[in-house]
Amino acid sequence: MMTERGYVIDAYDDRVVVEVKRSPMCAKCGACKSIGPSERAQLEIENLCEAQAGDTVLIEMKDGGLFFASLLMYGVPFVALVVGFALGSLAGAGFEPPLSDITTFAVGFALMAVAFFCISRFEPRLKKRKTLPRAVDIVEPCDAAEYLDRAENY
Image (tube, rainbow, N blue to C red; front, side):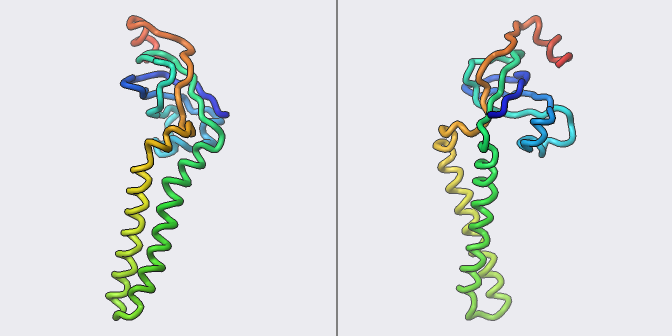
């Protein structure tokens, strides 16, 4: 299980926006690689500890959670695209070359779109698997007076 500390920037409903300093362990995970080469990254995560803006929280992610999420979001649509290209190629085999290419791409991208639609429909069920990062404990609570000072020094 991977754990990190993060600073809560915003809290709403059952979610928090947390800023984390990238540690060597965090860098290996790659969850926030798309943020850029900064030393800090922001994540929106589940709030299990009722943290408020200004609190420092313990963030937990099960091993393999990121791999599962990446496989689901990138692997499944990619496989759907390749299968769609193959089916489109078979379906367009009897047509002239320009029309067979259009059929191949149309079926491939349509199947990929169906895969993304199915993933978005099942997302609430997938969140229940607890594979995504979540704030599990408040390490340092903060009152409103401390919030601005801590935000500058974090």
